Image (cartoon, rainbow, N blue to C red; front, side):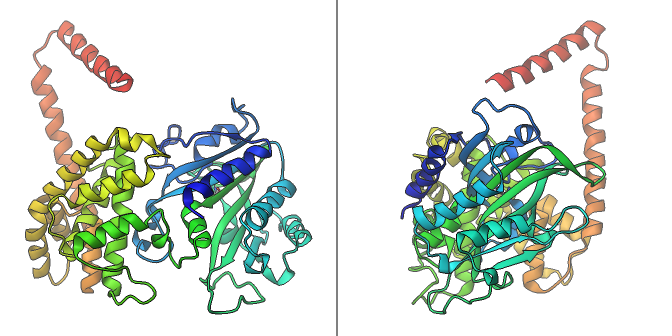
Length: 466
Ligand code: SER
């Protein structure tokens, strides 16, 4: 089943059950300064989970664009991604565990016809903050999930949220799929066995975490569910990795074509693991960067812009490893991303020129220094904070790239000293810009200063409106 069809099936299923389909929110959270990106479908809904009325009602569903930077280092295995889409349904103080679990089960086993034999679930084991979730386990049993396929796990595994530092959260119940075809499905569910792939998470948001770290009972009991579209596509398309689903296949093929490699490591393929990892990282990172730039995020040394820079630069480094020669390769990959997603996310096609320009600009900038930076790096036997800072300052190596290079070489980076060097540098540039401002307006009359301030306010307003 194609991903476009999966997306639509999910939304239609919940629409039939009284949910309003809402559009994906931006990748940049509007109301949460504590995190850089939207990491889950519930994230833009926090005010409504806390009790505000949503204009579309108490039952919502959507497919949300998400970015998780915590997983960047895991990209390259079969399931981890930086950008992914999350299918979700929500009850804002409306239905509770019984309906949520029943519908998840029905969607998986009836709508998608996944065999119940291949499914297992986990429930919250209970602790000082909240009781054991026997209620969910009983519902699963009543639907036909055997006791041996139900695991009770602690907070680290079966509790979700808050998305930022504070906010709605609660125990969850997760659904797993046995992915191997050449081994029988084990009778007993072992959550540590990586062949059980987590596909869906139903969170029962009954608590609100406060600044002090306390879990307080929420005014309203909500359901928040999330299912990664890429993992679901992997299951439904019967492929061993998300990179072989139709959400990635055309992008991977393009990277392979550009690098002159003929296949992707998998059944019957003899590419090295290193090639496989490089190809996957390039596809993942440039997809994420393409989506971010389509929302107006441009490269910089701070916040979201730093992440886009880091993603592009890391992709460029792996492109060099694969010896990609074509000078337009970054742009060509972005064009495939746009083509693959343009029907679902029109902002991609609308901004295609801007995306291509931003990507190419950053690639060229980094390429100018990458080779000499690598030569400098090769000379090092250990990386002091000063070395790491020089690589950053002179050659544009984000610290994460230096750390990755060091790991490959089996040497250390003095990260504390690097932090101190950065602070010193920021202190210097702050003083410099304060001086500049003083230089510009030091002799101005009160009137000129006021006009200057007004000009800044006007510019800021224009920037917001336009
Ligand atoms: N917020 C939960 C998650 O991200 C369910 O959507 O897994």
